[in-house]
Length: 189
Ligand code: AMP
Image (cartoon, rainbow, N blue to C red; front, side, top):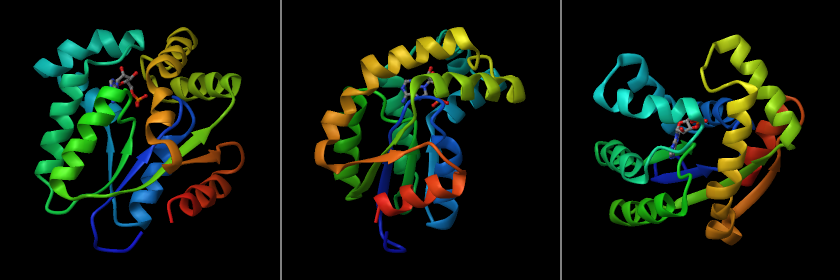
């Protein structure tokens, strides 16, 4: 990733794979802004905004928030940026979101420079999410909702692997954080 230029990394992978942690480091070390739609939505819930009240039950059930809400949110974020150097964590999650993002990136002349896909087996994902929930108190990090989020991922987000096709780089998400991070960096250069 050349410094200074527009660049967009789309980080794919199921809930619990560790995208948030890894995306944060990639952002820090490569002059990117991390955009986590889950964090943005949780912040609205915590602040009790109108949007937060609307999406709270959806997050708690492990379902996806409607595409138009996410697309408007991302459009706002990107158009307020002076230059678009971004890593997305948790967006896009549907083909409709991916299409809208393509249009937006075209308008902003910002190229997608990498699409890493972090892979972790299902049972390990559930274990990690339950553990994270115990530490953070996140209301959707329990086994029941975690299983629903995996189902939603398979049904609505996995088609993005075909959508991005040859640009997707599979990354083994098992191992110590540093090793996984190294594989991710290698996949976007
Ligand atoms: P995450 O922190 O990425 O696991 O997201 C937590 C929850 O926020 C998800 O289970 C969804 O309810 C909602 N969410 C986050 N990103 C999106 C998105 N791109 N599209 C729809 N819903 C989303």
